[in-house]
Image 1 (tube, each protein chain N blue to C red):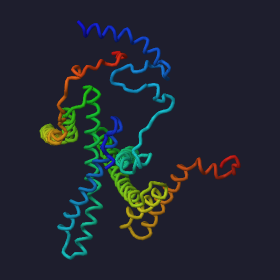
Image 2: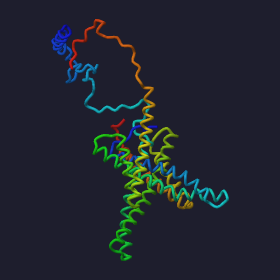
Image 3: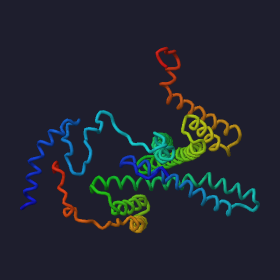
Image 4: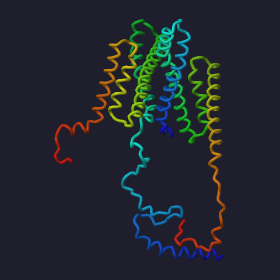
Amino acid sequence: MEEYTREPCPWRIVDDCGGAFTMGLIGGGVFQSIKGFRNAPSGINRRLLGSLVAIKQRSPIIAGNFAVWGGMFSTIDCALIHARKKEDPWNSIISGAATGGILAARNGLPAMAGSAFIGGVLLALIEGVGILFTRLSAEQFQPQLPPMEDPSQLGQKPPPDYQY
Amino acid sequence: MSSLNENDDANSQNNSYGSAGGGLTGQFKPFASPYLNFDPGYIPQAQPEFIFLDGGSKQRGRFELAFGQIGGSCMIGAGLGGVSGFYNGLKAATLAGQAGKLRRTQLLNHVMKNGSATANTFGSVAVIYSAFGVFLSWARGTDDDLNTITAATATGLLYKSTAGLKRCGMGGAIGLGASVLYALWNNKDRLSDLGHYNPAQR
C-alpha cells in the first residue's frame, strides 16, 4: 500500500470523506447484494436481478451516509486539533461522539445522546485497539544495548574542536 | 580539576583550528555541533531536494489520489445538488403558494434530497473511475493519459450498463469525450510545441 501517511489537516476532510464513501459503497454493495438475493422471488435469474437492482438502488445511499459521517468526523477532528493544539486519542473519541450527536440532531434529544454515546464508544474501541497493536508491535523494536565500555579509560582525548 | 583544565585547553585551541578548517564552503562554522559529522556547506541551498525511492515513480500513484478524488467529487456533487435543489424548491414552493414554516421545511427537504442524490451519483462515478484507474495502472505498470481515457470510457459504459444499449453507449461517449478533453488540456504545452516546428530543439 502506498497509503501510509495521512494528509495534512484541511485536506484530511476530503480524504476521509472519500475513504468512507468507498468503504460504504463496497460494504453496502456486498450487504445489499445478499439482501436483494434473499428477498427476490424464486428463480436464480430473478434472484440475481434482484441483487443487482438492490445494489444499484441502495448502496450509493449507504455510501453517502458513510461519507457524511467521515466528513463530519474529520471536520470536528481538525477543529479540535486546531483548538487543543495537540493530536491524541481524545480528539478522535470526542469527535466521534460529537458526530454521532450532530447527525442524529433531527431525531430528538434522547436519540442524540444515544448516538453520541455509541459514536464515542466506537471510536474509543478503535483507538484502544490501535494503541494495543502499537504496544504489541513495539515489543520487537526494544533496543538491545551492547555492553558499553567507558570511553574515558581508553586514554583518548575528545577532538579539540567541540563546540556546543 | 584536571578535566576542567583540559576543557579550557580545548577551547583555546578551537579558534586556530576553526580558522584552519574555515577554508571549507558554507557560512556555517565547520562542525558546529558534535552531532553533525559533515560540513553543512555541502548541502545545496539553492534548489529544493526531494528524496525518491529507487525505482519509484516521481508522482503520486492512483491509489494515493483516489480517496481525495472520491471525497472531492462527493463534496462537489453535494454542493451542486444543494444549489439546484434550492432553486427547484424555491420554484415549487412558490408555485404551490407555500409560506412560513411550511416553505422553510420544503426548501430544506429539497436541498437535502437533491444534494445527497447528486453527491451519491458523483461519488459512485468517482469510485468506479478510481477502481478502473488503479487496476489499469497496476496492470500496465505505467500511469499515463491512456489509462485516464480507458478508465473514464469504461466508467461511463459500466455506470449506464443497465439502462439499455443506447444509453450505455452515451455514457461511454461522455466518459471518452471528457477524458480526451482533460488529456488535451493536460498536455497543452506539448501540443503547442507540436504546431510549429522548432529547429533549435534537438
